[in-house]
Image (cartoon, rainbow, N blue to C red; front, side, top):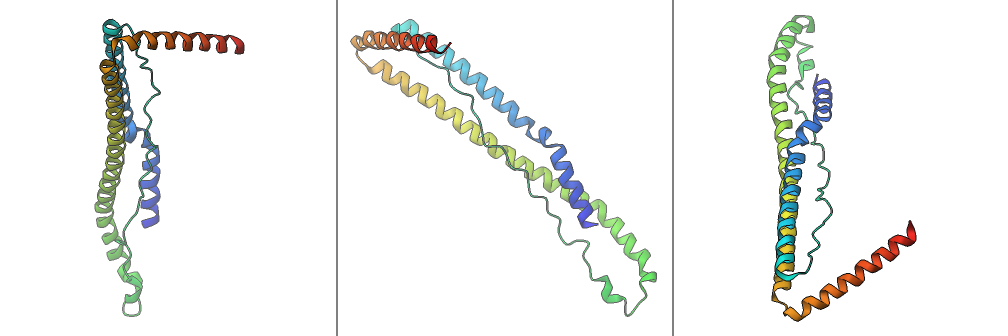
Length: 179
């Protein structure tokens, strides 16, 4: 009975994995959209104020693939009924034992499904927190870049533009050689 319940919970966990992870994917898309909007607005503002483009394209934020929770079933059904067999014939106890198992099955399924759901919730929340920290770090990096850019003398802006032009020309040259 225990192994059947364990197998069913593991199968359910695997079958519903994408549903458990859906909130993580939703938050990931939302953070990416918010970050890109922030980067786009920031780039426009820097360009209009300083005439220097701010490269704002970044790779997608990825989080470590959440692990599947460990499904464990306690020793609820493991009673030493065989100890009673010398005293009472098991044929007489079979009905009582079966009724006890049937009463316990519903409780165990509910308890273990709740535990499985809680474990998935903890795993997804940890991944969302990791995603949030990464998004915050990236925003801080962008703000720090803008701080450095705004604190430099205006004379350096023209040298930055010249450097960027040379890099663009070099990139076109290299890209043209590979096509």
